[in-house]
Length: 164
Image 1 (tube, rainbow, N blue to C red):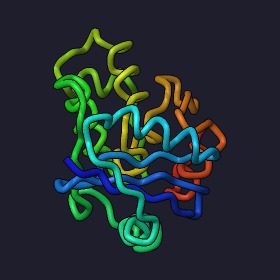
Image 2: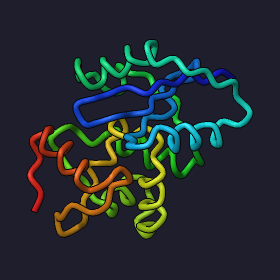
Image 3: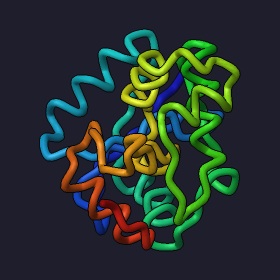
Image 4: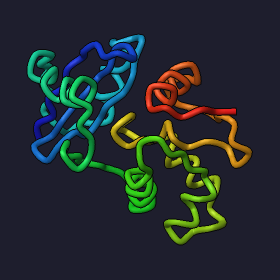
């Protein structure tokens, strides 16, 4: 397997974006590219890893400038069956809407699996495209975000979502 990645700027800061032959496998906001690269290398130990910032600027531009999303941008989601179900449920949350961990658990047929859903949301490998930023607490407050709550607020504001 070949993974090509690049580090590029977006309106929300620096990202590491990676893709396989099938589609985008990783999209992480990062303030430290060395740590982001180390995580990518650890995740894909058996793959050939190639850095090409210029090549990966194209999908980054489609995502953050042209505002294209799944299914226009092909994804290669790699995780457990449960994680992939959670991420697929997140893909059904429309721009301008939010969801809760409980809603996702219900949608995937595991209404009592709130912690497992929360863990899967936190392990989302493709931030922004798989919109884990749209998950809020049951009371409507912000909740956590792997890239930080300040960035989550910025993305939600950009999407026109107001949070308590």
